[in-house]
Image (cartoon, rainbow, N blue to C red; front, side, top):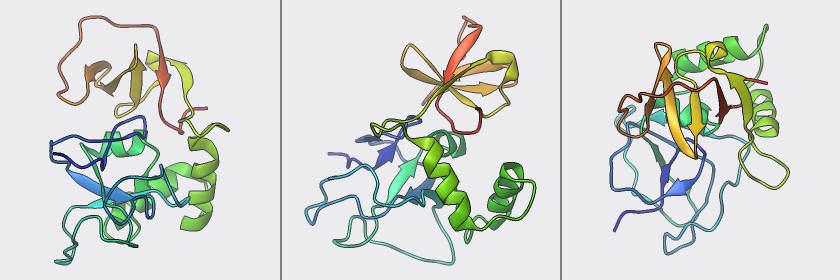
Length: 178
């Protein structure tokens, strides 16, 4: 049976047998038996490379952070995570530069992201925007199904099948578009 440690574009923790291309964490989210007991425990939501400096971890160790997995970088970003400043330093620097006109500490970035990623009732914050205003890599929801914007078109997650319909406005599950 798959573990409930896969993150969808809406930030939900789901059980899915498919392997992710990135992993990340939001702190200790599981009980000693591996059951997920909370959505997040920290403001620092990061995503990381699956392999870095030969490090190995046993999944869901009691008292240690919960390993979460993402289909891809677009999914990790849409779910509200940022690149790790250690294993993905180049991507982190690009993300930080796009976020702010000047240098910003990772802790300040995490606080700002956390304030924007969730509503007061703990659900993922969303915005509406015309399709033409969205950059490649933005994630949108159509009838509750996540779609990735790519080359001006959109595709269904997780298999990225092309869609025939083009809608004028989408709900955006990302914090980068006010």
